[in-house]
Image (cartoon, rainbow over all chains, first blue to last red; front, side):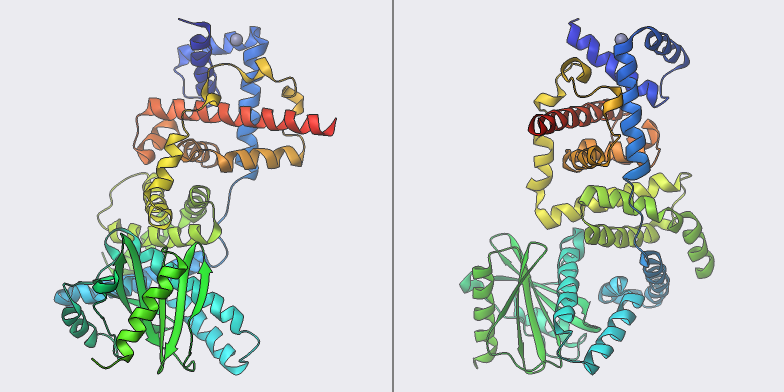
Length: 268
Length: 188
Ligand SMILES: [Zn+2]
């Protein structure tokens, strides 16, 4: 056994000694060694010191309000689970309610109410908040099997699915010719309203196109945002807000938005 | 179990560990907002499995869910390659055997961690450390979990926890030592 191998093993033992994970025999053997070897005693001291610093100073506490949010979510979840057992057949359609977070929604509603009374000044902040919501909804959709509530071979299957679930016209379109294939749809909750998400795929990248009612005026051109590494393209048309979000390039995403908007505005 | 009892029990057993849950998610993801989202998601998952849950150690159970949720989150946000990169950087020169004290003159007992700047260096070093080391260090040093508990959460044998912890600490010591000596040279 080489010197460095011996030292590695010894170092492991000193670690386990500090952590009190050694058998009694090993523990006292190491202890005896530490009494006579300044080198190892120094190692032990450093391990302890780093450990103490990490323990005392590097821990994060949950932010204020998170517990309350989760408590409400859980309560809502228990309620919706009861609903579920009553109407088991509609389980799939109800899945989005797992993610409705009452206190957040209430807070958002309250903030929106305040904003509606003082319009210009805080628009920026409201945009940020919506962006956060959209990014979170997007990331959430990518986790495990959250992406699709209805899978499709084409728009004719997705459209009727949405008709029963949202009170506006979600318009799934086939954009395969332009490189964006329609995977299906999902329900989300944005801007205190149920939102339809049309899910597209482009070269293995997912695009969520969120559609939900808005009071905002029509927009002639697209607005682009970047948030937490995602690109967002937004526009408003006839009382509906459209938000496309993805990790594809902004150019590609703008192209997607152009293609989609052209399709829904031009009569077939 | 009635709905109220269920919620009450969940509150006692699970919500009481929220700081630990947040701490782990925060150290894995590296961001406040991500950690909040992960903790929300993890608690939803925990609640769905709670009625069937029989585990005695509620903290380990919760942290296992938080860890899995964090990994899924990172995967969906940054792609799988991002996680792989952590693994690729695992075997590096800093893992070579040898005691830190052998080489560094600046890293003797009284010299370390006595100033807030040095603590910042340590914090930075831990933040930049590959995830597989970082998580065991956080679970052990901050949450005071035993090798066995960490082994259950991470899903590796106890011996692996021991060696990751040991190698992780050596990395921290070496990173700290080299940054301290670099800084001292600049100051001279
Ligand atoms: Zn020795």
